[in-house]
Amino acid sequence: DTAVSQTPKYLVTQMGNDKSIKCEQNLGHDTMYWYKQDSKKFLKIMFSYNNKELIINETVPNRFSPKSPDKAHLNLHINSLELGDSAVYFCASSQVTRESSYEQYFGPGTRLTVT
Amino acid sequence: GIQVEQSPPDLILQEGANSTLRCNFSDSVNNLQWFHQNPWGQLINLFYIPSGTKQNGRLSATTVATERYSLLYISSSQTTDSGVYFCAVDSSNFGNEKLTFGTGTRLTIIP
Image (cartoon, rainbow over all chains, first blue to last red; front, side, top):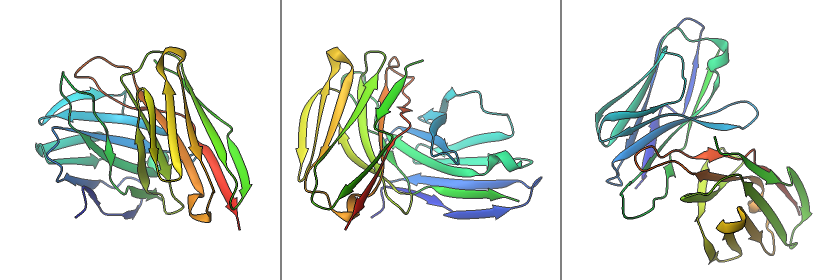
């Protein structure tokens, strides 16, 4: 009964390739996020989507293209992979309302290694 | 943007000891969460605590929003408590929510 799931868990690929990471949440949330954790364990927001609409794009290179086919799914496509893209990518979701505050729930992460 | 500082950066304790982890932030927040990243890399939600005090078993947390800090208490530490503890906050307006993470406290519990 995983709340936020990601596939694949591990991804090893060569420089220049294109790859995708998929995320699904079954919590009924309307907002989904991608975060990147670098080799020093620092976590930073990349994108957020609310009801399939892009809300935040945190100065991420345009080689990264998120896509939300519906509010339960947020995928991340990366073109022309570079060594510096090696990291752990976390998907998260939350329910956002004007009246109440919210909590973000994270997926298990996808460890991307570019060689 | 908002700054988040966590202390100490590293903590090594014997099993059974108690610990206090601190998170300072530079602006008012509408969300504050504590996470435990276990040795397998999973981010586990511990507390959602933009203000007040909460307890869950051996863990408790307090956020004093007016003074811009939060504390995470771990009592009677177990080896399974090892990992990195992150504080994350959000100070953005409605519709632009995002968490800004601190650099974490690495906790090692020795049997």
